Length: 601
Image (cartoon, rainbow, N blue to C red; front, side):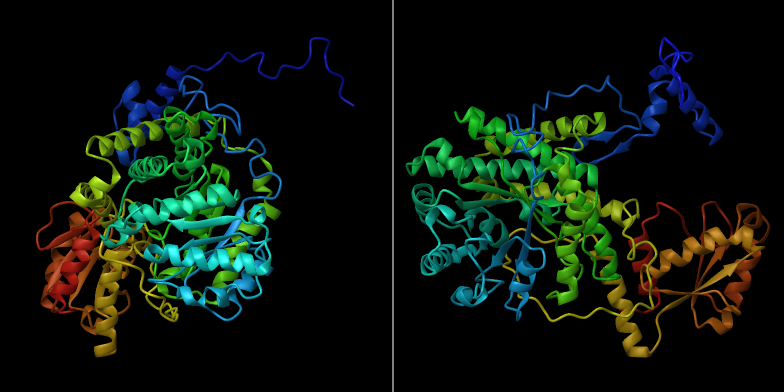
C-alpha cells in the first residue's frame, strides 16, 4: 500500500505551467526543420486547416478559445441536447428507409434492431396504394412511421391515418411524421406546391394526434446539391421560418406550429463538423423560437441521415467505414433519429446483407460501444464548442441573407440558392480533383481488379430542381471510360512505370504514380520493357538526384521505344519530359487528358 505524504501527492508540483507562446516556439522549431520559416502566430496559422464557410480549425485549442454558454442538456439554447436525458435511456431511434417493396424487408428491419420506418412513397418510391401492403404485420403502436411522399403527401397521410384507425391505435399513441415538405419538394423538382393541404394536416395533428408531426424540414436537397454545412443549416432555418409563417397564418399558435416540425440533416465522415453542425442547428432554432415568442418550444427534433454525397460506387465496402463514422458523429451530436444508408445505396436497391449492416451500425454503437449513455459527450471540448459557435454564426449570416432576399421560396425560384450551392460545390470539386480531399477506394488506393457489386435498380427519385452531386462523380466518369475500353478491346488502357535506381529510390513515387493512374482506370505496368508493356505512355519514377542524372536520357530512350508522352513523378524542369504529376496536381485533368490521348472515349 502506498502512503501519501502529509501534503498529498502533486505530480505537477515541480513543473511550471506551460504558456501558449512556449508552445508556439516549439512549433517554430519543428517547421524550421522542414524548411519553413514562421514565427509567433504565423507558425500556428501554418498548421491550421481551412474549411468551407470561411472557417479554420487550429492545431491547438485552450481555455482561451471562448464560446457562448451552451447551457444544460434539455434547456435553451438546447446546444447540448433537446432533452435533459439525451438518448441515454434507450439510444437514438434507428430509422430504416424503404423506397421499394422488398419481401420481408420492413419486418426484418423492425425485428432486428430498427425502431421506426421511413417510407418513400409516390414518385421515386412505393406507390401510395401499396402503403397497406408495406405496413402489413407492423405494430403501429410500437413502430413510428415517417412518410416522404412529395406531391402525394395528402393522399399518403390519409392512408396512414386510416391504417391507424383500422388497427385500433389510440390517437395519443400515434408517433411519427406525415412528412409534408413542399419547399423540399420544390427544391428537388422545381415545382411549387400550395401550402393549404399541409396546413390542414398540421392543424389535424395538433388537435388530434399529440405525438404525430405533419411537416419535415429536409435539408438534404441542399446538402446533395453541394452545399456547405452553413448553407445546409441556413437553408433549413429559412424553410422552417417559412413554414412557421404559413402555419400561424392558418390559425396555429407559435408553439403549436413549432411542434409540427422535424428537421432532417446529413451526417458526413467529417465527424467533428457533423457534431458541431447538429449542435449549432439546435442553437439556431432555439433562437428562432425565442424571437417568435416561444422560447420554451425551441428544442429542435433532428432526424440525421448518413450523407448520400459521400457514398461511392467503386469499392462500396468502404462506405461501411464512412457511415460508421457519420453515425458516431450523429449520435455524439445529439440526433434523435438516425438513418444509416446501406453501403450499396449508390448502386441500386440494397440487399439483405447491406440492410443488416446498416441496422447493426447503430446497434453496435448503442449497445456495445454504449455511445448513447453519455449525454453530449463532446460538450466542454474547446474545439467542438468553438467550432459549434463559429458554424452557428456562419449559418445565421447565410439565413439572414436568404431572408433579405425574400425568404426560402424566393431564393429557390430566383435561382439565387442554386448559384450559391453551385459555387460551393465548384470549389469543393477542385479539392477533390487535386485529391486534397481524398476518396479511399476511388481517388486513393483504387482497385482496378475489384469485382463489380451489382444491384437491382432503385426507383428514380424526383428530379428537375437542384442537382444531386457525388464526391466520386468525376472519377466515376473516368473509370466508366476505362470499363468501356476494357469491354471493347479486352484490356484496360496502360501506362508504363519506368523506375530508376534502387527500390529505396523509386518506390515512393512509383506507388504514387500507380495510385494516381489507377484512379482513372489506367493500369500501371512495372514489369519488363516498354515495348512489351502494351502502353503508349510512360512515367519516370525515382529520386530528384537520379532525375538530374538520368531523366533526359531515359525520356529519350522511351521515345525511341515508341512512347508518345512521358510523365515525371515529381516536380522540376527536365528536357524531354512532357508533363509532371505530383501531390496536389489536378488528377482529374491529368487523367482525362491521358485517356483522350490514348483514344479512350
